[in-house]
Every structure is written in structure tokens, then in C-alpha cells.
Image (tube, rainbow, N blue to C red; front, side, top):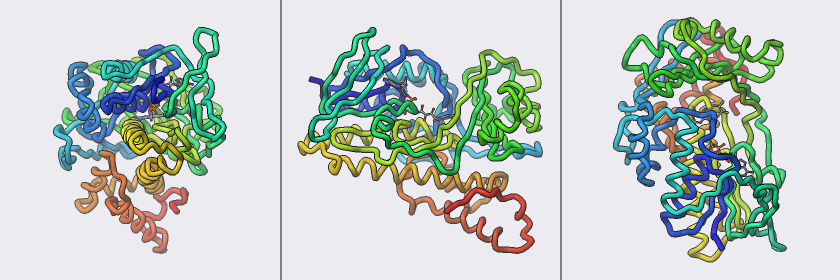
Length: 423
Ligand SMILES: Cc1cc2nc3c(=O)[nH]c(=O)nc-3n(C[C@H](O)[C@H](O)[C@H](O)COP(=O)(O)OP(=O)(O)OC[C@H]3O[C@@H](n4cnc5c(N)ncnc54)[C@H](O)[C@@H]3O)c2cc1C
């Protein structure tokens, strides 16, 4: 019998498989689709590099020639140029390169799944998990799968749900809580002939354009030398009230941001528009007896800072460590796995607080990027892997600015804050 069943062969599932195999734990990855398959989420943060390095996956990333991401740039709505930040300004401990990557997700996810197989995971594709099985003491004992129309049960000591926003186990156990603040909507497609920047240094950065609609922004992510991913994001209600078709709405938003409109002037769309919606939620619990929720299957926060894959990969690493420890102690109870949940919740809460403060400040965020005092701390957060709130004092500084603006009558910035609550 295999020791761990991993549901889903996205970044969370593959990374979990890699770490388990490296620790000598027999594991099987069940993936519903056949890779390569498309997926949203193409820009990585620096902390993923450490994981790729630990898994000996960096040579594959380099060989594939994914675009190197050296930084990020923000564009205010008025088209007044860009505010950029470069990873090299704040080298991360244990990360021996000053860049991370932008990826074509079909290729990246496929390579990572192959890597998991090479390290020892048994990978079965085209097999969807229908349900997680529990014994009479409420311990996970396996899964029900559909193989070519026939229903089969597979058994294991641990079940790791890495099924992304499908969240098979969280939904089965009714653990899902939709985010009370964010209900966003994105329209995205790939284009050729996008002028990525007039500054060659920032041409391969991720570019974020502020849009003049509620919580509106657009991403520009280079996928290869020709192709650029453009995505437009706002509150879902804003899109619904516009009564526009997604194509119309997309191009209206592009036209509303002067820098983006210029970048897209001669752009040629090379694939169909896709939409993503209702993507902010958290599961009430991330662990139970013999099971863990990993990556998007546990929680998904707004993608403004490209945090998704790093959270998926880091949570997979810590979930694998928790499995190894549980095997050593012979205790796979919910209580034994609880430290995993506490750690992941602490890390994601920091991203979430950062995101809320960002949406409160919106355009004023560029002040923090330019500020000598705060710039490096912003950069540290943007690089990922911060699990200790005390190591993120810039969040308090952002709060202080917001409180000063709100409590000072006639403050110059008063009209710039949005109405999102921050506590
Ligand atoms: C609009 C938008 C923009 C984003 N931009 C970024 C970005 O720039 N950078 C970034 O890092 N992240 C971004 N993300 C987030 C990123 O897409 C996810 O965080 C990341 O893919 C999570 O990885 P995962 O492995 O947890 O889930 P997934 O990548 O979704 O993988 C889950 C896998 O499980 C499989 N599966 C599902 N159900 C079953 C089942 N029942 N049985 C078997 N297999 C199953 C799926 O086929 C899939 O392959 C963005 C997300 C959105 C919505």
C-alpha cells in the first residue's frame, strides 16, 4: 500500500510528491487532466527558487529557458511612468540568484510533474478523485477514483488534497468560507507585439497597471520572447454592472490606462479570452486525522502579488515534513498535524494583510515603493516566505499612514484611500 495519496498534479501536488519521495515516503499523485494543460498564474516570486534548488529542479527551469524575472513595476492610472523594484536590491538568504521566473503554466506544471515522477512519485494522469474515504474513527483512509468509467477505491495512510480551487476535500467536508471582502473577476489572454517597457531594464519585469475602477488592475507578464500575458482584474460586481461582454470590457479597461493602452497599441491576440471568478476563500481547517489541505485547496488569496505558486510550493514542503514527522512518531491525528496548519495560516495571513492594505492604499502604494525607509521591506514581502508577522513591520507603517490620513481633516491624500476595511 502506498503511504500518501496526493490529489492533483499542479505545483502543490508535484512539490509535495518530490519532498515525500526525497524522504523515502511512497506516494502516488492522481491528476484529473493530462498534462500539459493550461492554467492561470504565470509569474513567480523569489522564494520559489529556494524550493526548486532544494528539489534539484533549477537546472530544468534554466534548460527550459523560462523568462527571468528580475523585478516588478507599477503604473499609476494617469500614465506618469513606472515605479520599479528590483529583487537584487534585497538578496534573499539561501537564494543564489537575483531573479525568479515567468512561466508558461502548461509547460512548467508538466515539467514539475515529470520531476516528481523522476524522484519517485507514482503519477497517474486522467484520473479524477471523486471522494476521500474515512474509517470509523474519522481518519482519512483513501480515495474513490474514476478510472475509465469504473469506480475504484485506493488506500493510504495520508491524503494530501492538492486539487487547487476544485478543493475536493474542503468541499466534501463543507469547510469553505468565501472571502468577506474580495469577490474578484479576471479576464485574460495572450498577445504578441506588446511593447513591454520603454526601459530595457524593466522589459521582463511583471508590470502592474492601476485601473480607474474599484480594485481594478491589470497584469503584464512576459511568457516568451514573443508572447505576453495580459489580465484585467476588478470586483465582479463592477464587471456585472457594466453589462459588457468580456472582450469589450477587457479592451475598455486597457484603453482606460494610458501606459497599458500604449503598450498594447499594436498587440495581436493569439488565443481566446478566459475568465476567472470567485477565487478568494479559505477552508476553516487545513488538517484533520490523516489529511491535509495544500496550496489553493486550503486557501486562495487575491493574486495581486503573484503569491499563489509560492504558497502552493511552500505549503507542500511543510505538508511533506508533517507527513514524515507523523510517520516517525506514529501519530497522524489532527492534533499532530496542527502545527502545519498554524504555520500556513500565519504565512497566508501576512499576504492577506498586505493585500488588504494595498487595496486600501491603491495608488498611494507607490509612495512605499519610492520611500527609502520602506522600500526594502516591501521588497522582502514581495519575495515571499515571510511567516513571522514581527518580521513585517512595514505593514504597521502602512497602517500608520492610513490612520494619519483618515484622522487628519483635509489631508492631501484623503480622497485617495479606498473604502476597504483593514481591521
Ligand atoms: C486571476 C489569477 C491570476 C493568478 N496569477 C498568479 C501569478 O501571477 N503567480 C502565481 O504564483 N499565482 C497566480 N495565481 C494563483 C495560481 O494560479 C495558484 O495559486 C496555483 O496554481 C496553485 O497551485 P495548486 O497546485 O495549489 O493548484 P492548481 O495549480 O490549480 O493544481 C491543482 C491540480 O489538481 C487537479 N485536480 C483538480 N481536481 C482534481 C480531482 N478531483 N482529482 C484529481 N486531480 C484534480 C487539477 O487538474 C490541477 O492540475 C493566479 C490565480 C488567479 C485566479
